[in-house]
Length: 287
Image 1 (tube, one colour):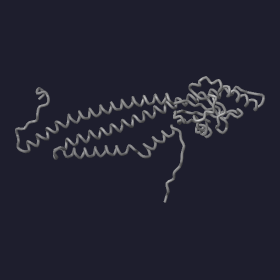
Image 2: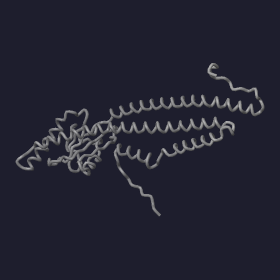
Image 3: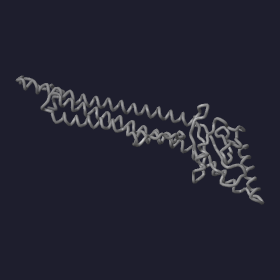
Image 4: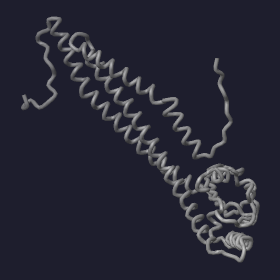
């Protein structure tokens, strides 16, 4: 008999979000139950429709079940569309930040090609000195933390002049080592609770003890923008849902009230009250 296996896995925030979406929609199939409930309502409405004229209240129940089913389907589609929009919007923001850091790595790598020396050791030393100078003279210290890493992922130098303890993780470095292009990314929270993105790029040329470059940037502003977008999307979704409910109620009232009057009049006629008439609701000139 097979036994369940538990595996401990570490992943960054972006990978976790992708996994959570896959687990919710593909593995657990969370959309199955509301869809099945909608199918049951529609089938029940069809059964009631077949009893119109034979059972009292069949028409009323048919309309109510159909409107409720359409309302559930509308809510399901609304949640799905908003979820996909917010997911795509978040990914596009994160990808934009990621590509910006990768372009910086590409620019630095291009500059390293220009450094040469009489021997390979001198060339490597020149590149190492150049990289350290870039870190010291890094102009965007207010936006990024620029670091140099050794072959073990340890911090050799940083633009802040510290070892960046508490704000770095080895995930991006390990991804870069395993990646074909030598680049890795990680999204995580620091020990202070701040959400950051770290991008790592292996140095493609010998540079003494420098094996990789890392850029770390805060996602606080990105997170604030995403929250504002989520609020706007929620307000718009609520407005659409409210409009759907109000229009559904109006639709139900416009059909249920006349049907109820017809059924009551038919029942009165069946009891022998032949003087009963349907009330006139429109313009008499239209008759």
